[in-house]
Image (tube, rainbow, N blue to C red; front, top):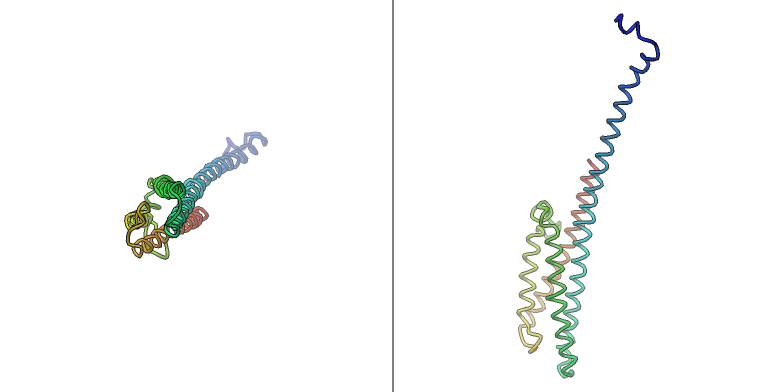
Length: 192
């Protein structure tokens, strides 16, 4: 104790404040680290996974609808000229094969690295994971494409229409799953 009593008052005050300042700096560093971590988690959950994938799926849904409109015009106008028919068939194929399938696959591939989102998190109304919804969608899309031939306008129209509705339901469920996952992650980040 004699050592402390021999120290000048200014140094005693310094000894009192330095630990507090060091603790404040450590807390500030921890706060900065935590803020950066939350920012990265938020960007990944909201933008990289939910927004990008949802945008791709919504665009795919639009392409699917446009393909159905081209198909409908082909069916309802069997006597159209060959040039218009060729253009409608090309539009149909482009919307299905090049745009829609690429977008849906891209949306799913975008999140395959996140096993929680891809194969564990379940959409509330269907109880299905993204992995299951994507498999169902692929099956329904194949059924839709194979049940009716736009070139010859032949096929099973009842199967075709049912498969269209099923594939659209899968697209809607995937969109809903992404929205629910974003809310789930938001709650988890807030709790952190």
